[in-house]
Length: 116
Image 1 (tube, rainbow, N blue to C red):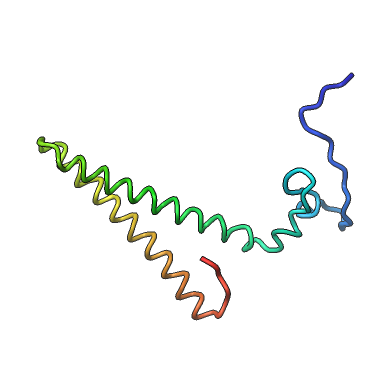
Image 2 (cartoon, rainbow, N blue to C red; image 1 turned 90 degrees about the vertical axis):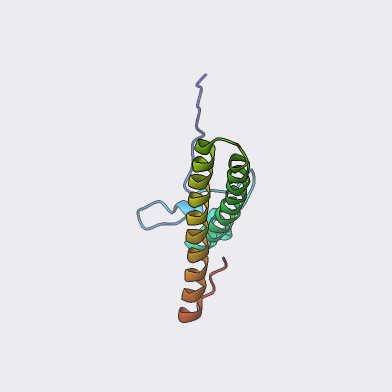
């Protein structure tokens, strides 16, 4: 009796001597091939970027809240730390805002459909 941690995969796609990973891998149990769901790399990257923007917004919100609580403390050290947190949050917001609008400008100039 042999014990395998990884199931053996069998090639089911026709290729020219290589391995077509989009055809070989499936999504979930009994799911379709990856190539059927994600036809292009853009189909895979766009949802990832959207979720990263949402996560960045949530982190930004909590950084503002943390900076506010630290600013309310009496010590000058806490107020300095609050200003550092606020500065980092504002820089992060500017980077996220700029990235969003750069993508929007590229969309208009090139006429592509980038869903962000």
